[in-house]
Length: 342
Image (cartoon, rainbow, N blue to C red; front, side, top):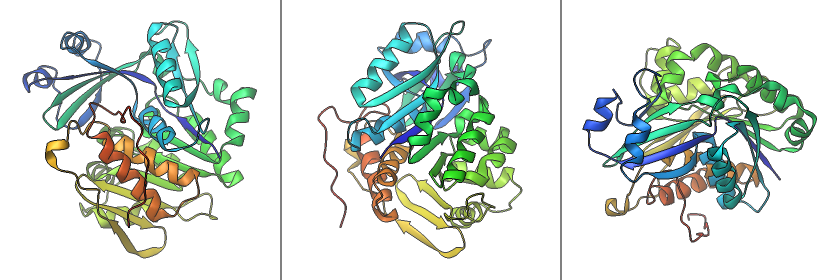
């Protein structure tokens, strides 16, 4: 069984700071923005000056590492674009150590993208400079060696941040999944995706077998699509019931809510399911950055191994609980073994 993931590989530069730092750059708590060349480029050096932790990041690459943490070796393949530089080598090395096979498109001109993450208490603010990550080409996806990997994959996952880069590549993967009855899952990314990239997001929706996001992303989606509701349960059902290309699979919409129950709606089924999270003592929480990415990774591991919806959600919550005890979207160096909740 194999999982193929597409999004924007980034070198994450993460450091603890006070509120003055995100305020300086106009960043909000628990939000993500794209860097403005004239306003935000100084943040990366400021974070490095604060003894930053460097991680192979980008939301879906975090999820790919998370899925690999729970799956047998050689189960996960990651696609995206990087520069021809030492930062790209750092990403490759980190992914190899995590058990993820990378098939990067290499841009000769742009540097590898990076994401600055300011951690304030249990909150984080992210500022992304896509650079090379913004150059991904569908020609790379359709090249014979890469497309053969697509055809062999049983599960395809695309992070919605890639909507800012190459929508045709996402649609090509969605079409292949629908045609071959593969599982196609998408992450909602961040509120700004649903707000400012609502049309391309809607264009991909017919291919979603699974869609995962948090309550803020779900509410932003509802508002941008003209729905007059902030009820997460109602929004989950609205998403689940969108028109679908592959009618052999009912769409499943999964909305996480931090420490509150995870809400799951299935297309055409009016009874929602709710799953309590894996509670941990607040004193053990180090950093919530990447909890959603970890949830997606754990959930994907369940899909790849053909587990039930209940166990797949449980896997996601288990991995998210591990991740928030680390700094940044990371997983314990000493590997833990998942045991299903009773």
